[in-house]
Length: 284
Image 1 (cartoon, rainbow, N blue to C red):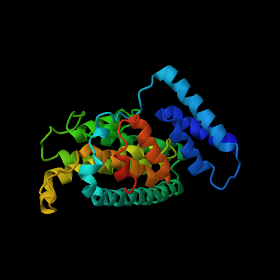
Image 2 (image 1 turned 60 degrees about the horizontal axis):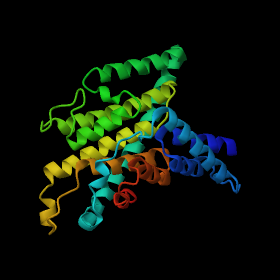
Image 3 (image 1 turned 90 degrees about the vertical axis):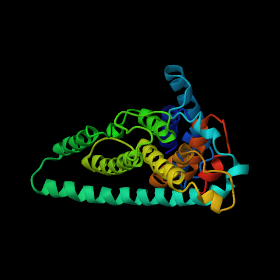
Image 4 (image 1 turned 180 degrees about the vertical axis):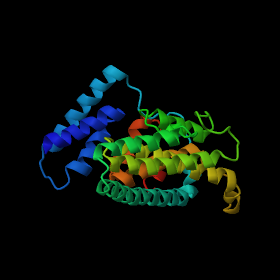
């Protein structure tokens, strides 16, 4: 069990360049109920070594680029926004429940096909065709390309970049595009996992969280901009990408069941640039 936990910590540490988050992941998921005093030390050593080797081969840059986004939330000016982040957390939990429900429906659908004589090796092909059809209709960001697609969504939410297939900034369909990415990702993740394709939930949960937070933040900025004035404050809502970052952590916590790992991973991805955004992320 110690080796299993150390392997999980190493995988997260190498994949995200986040050794401390890897240790927390092992403690939250694999090591539940185990009291071995040597376990955390083994996991920490394995995670640091894995992150070091990954940095030697791939560089020290984080998997998800949060350099600009993390400096946008100032506690002294934005504490009044905490209820909005709580609501964001509720939305992320609802999406996680929908993903689980869709997974059960997909399981039943593939069982039905199997009962009709469709061989199991065809199921991944069906899932792949679903991904191809959706991605070729203006939603190619749903295809996994490392964490590049998560970075693209963050930049789209922040208005700095227009990813392939996204509408022009300022278009009335901007929120619709993000909503399409979210719905497509949830459905395709459920189908692909039920079909037998190999894949995890960490990267999809970050992508879903970024789109949820982006929709939430842009909606507040574009359609509820007068709410701060009604509440008696002249401080506007935080930039939409700040909500996207909080949504990433909240969605990963709800889908993967690792809330501490999500918060620590957020800090490591930010490289310690700003700890202020942790406050709205924890309640979310």
